[in-house]
Every structure is written in structure tokens, then in C-alpha cells.
Amino acid sequence: MLSDRLVKLRKSKKLTQQGLAERLQITRSSLSQYELGNRQPDYETLKRIADFFEVSTDYLLGHRSNIEPVVHEEKTPYNVADDPDLQIAFRDAADFSEEARRQAIDFINYLKEKEKAKGRKSPNTEND
Image: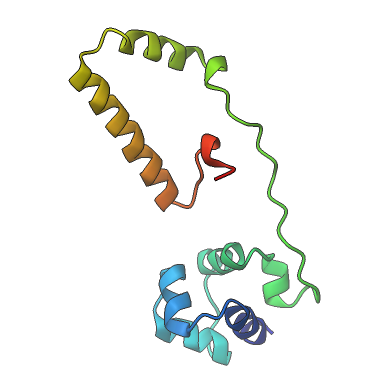
């Protein structure tokens, strides 16, 4: 069941085995074995597959016959004004030199990119 659904989902995204394997951080050989039904992914890999295709692990494993998109919990927008630590940090930053302010901004951008690489969106880019 997993093998058929995995092939169908991969093809629906117009991905090659190599392309999907890279996105899932597994080898093409492992993906091929999953699609042929010769091997089963471990739990973490199964979760990455489900997350990538936005389906439940139940669907992948054949416990559900229909694709029900995974419902992501609505996040309350983060409001910097409500965070006292950030308010203090911004006030303190007013005394920074131009170079120190630039470094602080660069560091924030670095953290933002790091979060993006992990697949997380920063709250102020939700609608980008």
C-alpha cells in the first residue's frame, strides 16, 4: 500500500526518485526500495514523507483510503510589542554604534535563514 501511494504522490509532484530522495534526505536506492515494496521506511522517514506531501502517516500506510490534508494548527501572529525582552533589547540597541546595529541586523537575518532552512517560517513572513 505504501509503495503505491508513494509512487502516486511522487508523480503528482512531477518529481524523479532522485529529486524526492534529495528532498527527504535519503538515498535514491532507499526510496526505490520503498516504492517497490521491498523495504519500509523507519518512523522518522515516514514522518518526513508525510510532512513533505502534507498527508497523514495513516494515509501512507493504507489505514485511510482518502487523502486528508494534514491540518496545521493556526498560529497566533507573534507580536514583538508584546515581548518585554525584545522591547528591552530594541531600547538597548538604540545606544549601539552603526556597526553594532548592522551586526545585530545581520545576525537576525542569519537566524531567519537558519529557521527557513529547517522548514520554519518566521512569523512576519507568513504571507510572503
